[in-house]
Image (cartoon, rainbow, N blue to C red; front, side, top):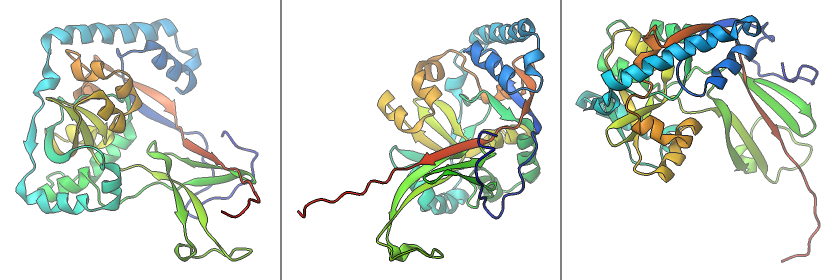
Length: 321
């Protein structure tokens, strides 16, 4: 752990520190940069330092060659992804979701709609998913869900996020950890005394500055430019739906028309190389996670997402204004 020797406080729901665990990751080979793949194997894969580097490169190269074949046999496939109108029966659920504060704060910058997206032809920028999590999501899915059940699976209105471990590293420095990759710093909030409960201060409270950590929106969503859609969030649910035989899924769709807009919504990988995801003849697609010529299974050590926060206090005396 990155902060083993620090004094510790933990959320009541958190259990004792787990021993390192191994989980199977489904990794897409053949996508640049190769060095990222080799570094991941060396640092994260169980026994990765002892694996033959030449064999790893050979496997990656074979997948890369296969992608070159697909540039001919499946050229333009990502531009043919269907985006169907959301069924009328789901309009009330979509309206309810749109009113949620978490939805409004996430999708408040770009034109946003709902639609039924074709899963196989959605472009992906994330190169790995956790096999056990995909299987757990599939187990949650009813074998024959009605439209409402399918919508709630893709756009959950209720959350079951894992507990957060909290450690105090010093007087003004804290670390927060979660097994979820959606864990992040959310916001800075200025709170008035009436907004605070359950806290006993050493003196009357004038105001409270809150540094908020938590989880990002958990909505299955894509970013659309012209006829192409890139999956932004919901990778494990999308893979679970494909494995269960679904061809389309209700998704939140954000539309961009220029690169500056892309920077407001997309992941760093997409922002740094938009031409690859929105213009390549045959970019990586969601269905590639099921293709044995592209994917590989890696036994990786379980990782945690850590958010470290520190703050500074300065006390001044100034003349009145």
